[in-house]
Length: 65
Image (tube, rainbow, N blue to C red):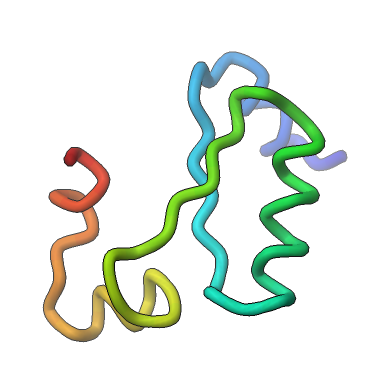
């Protein structure tokens, strides 16, 4: 476990958003198996957060809602 992982111990909510495909579902499931604080979210459109952002969508606004 890296030093950065220890910082997640105090975070009350962990959002994970993987690509919308079989590999993404597997990655999200691994995170969910670690803690009940992990919640999988999916971008409103596009295959992942990068594509969503590059199409001039506001990631911060999406997460706030």
